[in-house]
Image (tube, rainbow, N blue to C red; front, top):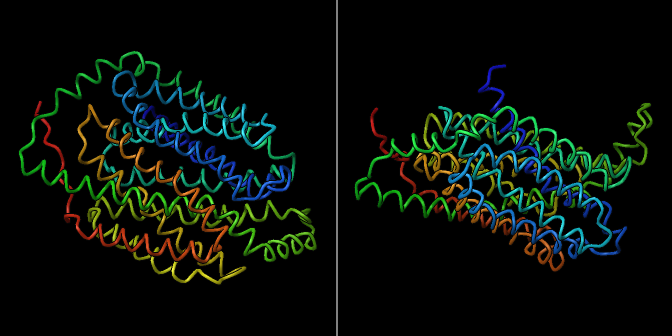
Length: 416
């Protein structure tokens, strides 16, 4: 494996860990802590919200530090810091202590998107496909959080679900720092070369850039609410609507000689993993289409898929609920690389991490705001109302995206 492939693998692992760590608590809260700590699912969500606010709020300073110091250095800080924070969270004895641990996880998690995506869009061509592959890794992190955490709940307890991944992330961070040490120590010279390639842009380009930027940030906010509402709540949705199916599956496996009797949490985790993993493959199709057709038509298609499946979901249970959940997750995951693609094409090299930082401040602030929304809507009306609200949100994305130009303009680069 050559150096570039190894670097890309590290960045993909970073995206995997980033989403994995932020969603461990989602499965823990849904499947065990509500009983162990005597709190409702909605009450536990309140302690997770500050972590997601940190996930967004600290994206901007993380991007600024990466542009001013070293993107590779910040990635090493990400791996080690989030691993240590996860291990520390495993020692929580109260919901408040868990909330503090989740906040610190969110601080370090905020580093990845503005920094890792800036590296991906800076170093390689075929940006759409690179972002799509990187996005699949991130979504496998989402999927694996439910699967691995469900397994540890059944075999060792929820605290282990924070400790083992934390140790792995620290090891990966040390290896990454060793692999990228030259880039960390020569970051200033690299920044100077990138800055020298930028040239001023005409007024009409700036006006079009402003229009696209508004569309990017509006769709970012709305799509983030959809993404958080679905990924965070899916284990609970399956626990509520497909638990009978999970019990039947574990009983069938046990009768077939597989030691699975009573592993209902693991089975629910498997359901969530399967939906997330299959849906994440939509990003590969989206990445290829972005490089060929541009973002407008692809975004419209992803929004349409979500509108249809969210509208169908209310009232469904067991196998039908899992099948339709796969449908709306295909749309939710498929749209993820589109805004990152547009930013990567438009943002200048020296400020790219900061622009991604602003994008993810918007994105993860919306993610954090989605948690109180889930808590309130679920407590007052149930999940059917949440699905209808998500269909409306997807319709808003469709209308706003229709205002995009057919092609995204790119900044002019000075010739050598």
